[in-house]
Image (cartoon, rainbow, N blue to C red; front, side, top):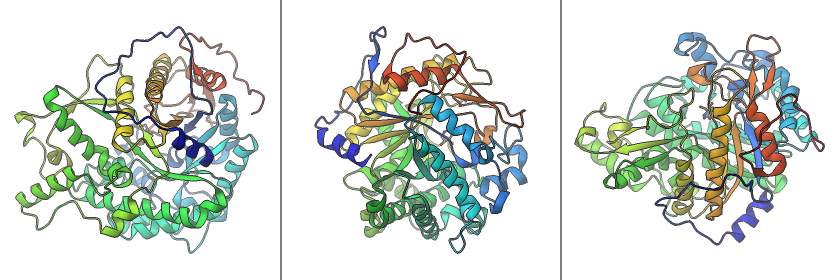
Length: 513
Ligand code: NOJ
């Protein structure tokens, strides 16, 4: 992977220019190749799939706590106690990876399965054994593990201490990361520190739409953002200094970024600024030349805080040392992308949001067009040109970093005839190829998800899987959807063929896997 990254950087001479538009009218009758060596994977996360919530020494995390104390805060009053039972069925999971012919599989570690006390004073051998079994089973078939350290399941005990709003979380996370590198760094070459900081901070601490369901808007999400970023950077440097030589791997962060399209040309600046708030707050400190939070956030929040009577800005400051520690602290731009929003800012968008709050700080409104194809999730519509524009923007704004698409996917209801998902994957991969053709250094793509799983506050009502999971069967039977056959063919041929009609009778394992 390192070799591949370096090669990519050396041959990358074309820097993308600011994007205005791109025609998406193309000849779809000819299969379109992906670059040689392009990598395909799928992704899941521990709480969403593993189950075994209290088995073999695992202790409680914030999602166990939320779903047990407030069950119907989740749409179908469900939880991840058993989920897909991957804790027991990991061999079937690996068999599915082989059926698809994946190059890599992204999954996350459950902090409380490895460290029952939250701290590294004692390692839980049974939890470690589970991940060793999974990793070794994958490697047996040449499937590279991509390991996310943190995909939202914070130890409940640490939440009692303030979770991501307590600056001590930097050390707690760094200690946990070091344990993971020590345990698995000999075999894992791809690491993701933190998955989707925006969802952790804004939804978890500002808007109360995710565990730990805290609503201290305009304040707590910014405290979380600072601590989370410093924690990420500390883990990055531990890996870089103490482990990289031994494992020869790469490590980065996964940022969720939707594209924000201005409604009219006069909204262009406002759309740029909103984008800096929405996800630039996590990308700018790491990927920009200057580092630190985006200037527009610092200025706007300081001014509003003063107007609102706060003695200092609600946005905490990084020290000089932290700014330096963060700059460049990701070997790749891990991108989770799903959809696009249209933004406008005018007199009608002023003073309509709670004060203080993240959206009052932004001061603009967004919507999605009703004619865009709609998934089973209210926020997810298919807008492939938004993906193209986003990739061009990242390339232009951050000096064309290597990008790993760490998530992209579509939700449906139950059923294996998932034509909407097939169309979405094809159109988004096509848009990604447009960006690659323009010089954007996208080196890998990860479909969310390998299989249906616990979709957080939506429980099991929204399905993202290439494989359907039957939650009524004790075996949690996994059945390939049409999209699984299509994805398999894309990987096998290394090309995108809109005309391919899969024979969905039988899923087999090809030679080599
Ligand atoms: C992003 C999150 O990382 C993942 O956990 C979630 O299930 C998908 N988006 C779909 O909403």
